[in-house]
Image (tube, rainbow, N blue to C red; front, side):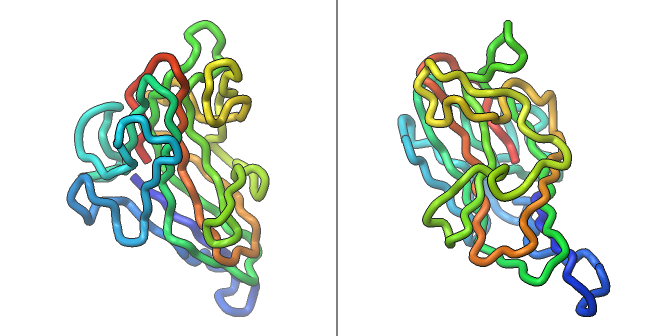
Length: 204
């Protein structure tokens, strides 16, 4: 697994060199522990299962870089599960780019390839984690963006929103262009399920 956020500062500090400001692979902890300053919260908690590190199980493969990935389940009831990264800032940049690898198998329609039932979204807070909005409010996907829209008739906390849903069939790469000025920013990986069906979960 690989999450990294990097900024290209305006000259002359680094003459356009990409500077990593957040880098995490979840490989230096013992499952189910998260690394320091990473936080797992259930906004709706039907089962007590939080985001955690994992080195086995579904969906396969269990990690992108050995031995771990962050993982959350996809239960058969309504849930809303958050994985929050440590806060970070980037100023005086040409651009900030987030790259991460993830593997998901989340309940989706078998008939409509554009419709998801359970899904994952990426959100960004610009006020230290007090409020969050979808990443597309602040930035844009360069690669590996949302692939379905979540159904509005099954009680999902993210109903009607574009999201990752269905089966990625292994780890894929997502690249996001973020605003060049970030102060007290917090990234959130959010998995939400509805009131019917379940699947294997999401690994990041």
